[in-house]
Structures are given as C-alpha cells and as structure tokens.
Image (cartoon, helix red, strand yellow):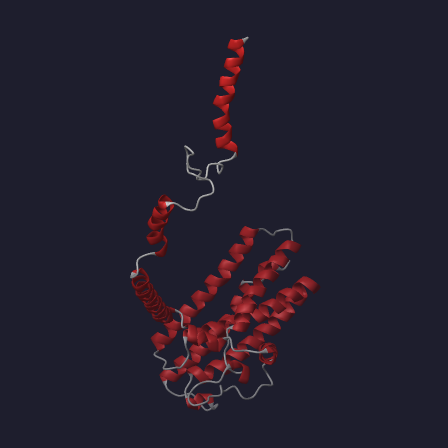
Length: 308
C-alpha cells in the first residue's frame, strides 16, 4: 500500500510541470520556464533576413528600368521602319504589274452611270457624242462621263455570265462543278487571248494611242452584257428568242466598238468622218473593224452550247 501511494504521488509530481508548460506559459514571470513560446512573437531575425533576400529580386536593380525603356523604344522604331520599307517595296513592285492607283479610276462608278452605260451597250444608235471628257489632261471619272471605260460592268458581267451559265446547265441536267469551272476558265482564257492579240496588232501597226491594257480589257468585257441578255431570253422563251436577242446585242456591240475605238485608233480626220487616206490609216481602220467584228463571234461561241 505504501509503495502504491508513493508511485502515484511520484507520477503526479512528474506530470504537473508538463501541464503547466502547455496550459499556462506565462505563469513564471521570473523567466524560469524551460522553453520560449514563439507562437505569438513578432518576426525574428530570420524573417528579416528572408525579406532582405526577397527585396532586391522584387524591386529590381536601379538602372534596369533606365535600360529597358530605351531598348524597347529602339526595337519599336526599328520594327516600324522595316514595316514601312517593306510596304513601300511591295507597292512599287505591285504597281509595275497591277496599277492599283489606276484601277480605282475604273471602278469609280455609281448607279446612274451603270444604268446609262447598260442602255448604251444595248441601244447605241441614238448616242451622238462619243468623246471622253478631260479635266486638266486627265480623263474624268466614269461616273461623270458615260463614254469613259470602266471595269465594274465587265467584272460583274463576267460573274453574272458564269452564274447564268450554271443555271442553264442545271435546267438541262448537265450541271457539275467541273463543267462550270471549265466554262469560267475558257471564258477567261478567250478574254486574255483577245486582249493579247489586240496589243500585238497595235504594236505591229505602230499605232500611237492612249489606249491602255486596262482600256482594252474593259472594252472586251462589255460583250458579256449582250451574252447575258441572249442567255436569259433563251432560258425564258426558248431558242428563237435566244437568236433574236443575241443578234440584236451583236449588232449593238459592233456599233459601240466602232464608234468608241475610232476615236482612239484612227486619226483626227477619220474621227470627224472625213475620207481616210494613207496606208497607215487604212490599217487602223481595218484593225478597228476587226476588233469590233470579233465581239459577235465570241458572244456566239461562248453561249450557243448553253441553250437547247
């Protein structure tokens, strides 16, 4: 019994210091506790040391911003100069083959001009003044002069011709993407060949004219208007209507080309209706008639197989 009591008392004396240390760390004001409580203490020297290490990394060097800003400005200036030089080089090389600035002139049209031009292409017999108007040695925009050539009507005419051709093939149960592509490519090839032959003929005849390649392309593209009229008439009213409307449009485009090109290819005397003299003027007259006569041939060749 004495041994058991002694052992229990020893256990109580052994557990009391540990409980005192866990539950009441501030009970010994004289500093006699064995371990220091750091749970509520402020930042120690180690935390300050860590902050000192992280400080220079986050703040950066004092001259870093001074070096980065001039370098970025220099890189931006160099990049912009390279971009401007590249753009100028592309514009110069592109203007050699495709005069972008001149193309804007040929698309300067409006609704009134398109309506008058289409009427002139279908019925050119009552039109009297065929001269192109000029302003300070520069032809005025097509929207101000119905006699000026444009590329809007030829471009839209070519696209509409391909669409109408696809419609005609569809009504005959012959439509296919491959056949429509062949139709479009053949029409484009014939147009390019026509312009090239005219350019070669002008070079051989040595005609000094202000006609450009774009002008010839515009005049050659006007025949698509008559082709569309013939195809639509054939689809709506049959083959006789196709032949009648195409015959009318062929005669109209022949007259239109004669009266337009004679001012460009013939001499001033021929433009005024006087007698054409000289071998060179006769060659120009024959060339004008040949260009005008080629339009009905192309119109029939590109449309006769689409109407059945």
